[in-house]
Image: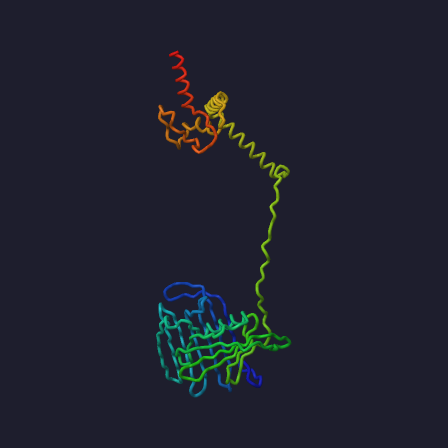
Length: 349
């Protein structure tokens, strides 16, 4: 903070970061914490301001504390303003202390009538977004509070780009002018000089004898650039030529062979069943081996209902596709019934 004659009057700091907000009802929300302080002396009179506020990602205020003081003897002024969001209302508490006299005022505002409201802490974040985007929306107009805690309008206007010198370096800044149009007092105007990464380089209050300016160029934040996702071509796996994969295959093969041999030793009836099926398959030689095997082993399946001992031969088999154009081979029951009919005809003849 310097005067018109470049005399250092104090310092101003601004910090914006993510933080957790603990509401009165016990909820925890990830929010944005804005903290700004200024300390200095104006004509050897100590004065200062501090703003601390929690915001959501839509710039809506959860809670804000604003403290101003001027230690002017014999009558010092200390003013504290608190905003607190509770349910559907915004509660404002103003404590004004002049000398030894303290006045407290509490006001409640419905959130329905505060659509588009921007508090002091939200204003600092909004300016950083404008500086990062390098533009100000046309007809930017928001609700805010004036110095007396009354609702009014705040407007933003872009004044173009300027080049400022910071030591031995220079940078192009976007100049944004904010004006608070009070309904009961004269308008208050500020000019903000914003660096390409959104940081505040200079602040001037129109009509004030001092301004705020950074002393050196900060480390500029650049836009993140992401490398393209690598593309890996599919390679043909020659597992037979790979020593490790072939060893795994050989071990697994031997393990399965040993397991199958052990099972067959413990269940000799399986060998008899398979031999009987192969013998019957070679005798009938069906055109569709899969369907023939399904009909042969179907009665042994636990999931299927056990067929009746005397089933009609005209009943379709559940293993056959009625829409199939292939000529089906005769079922086991048809073969059995056909054999019985041939024997009957031979006896009559």
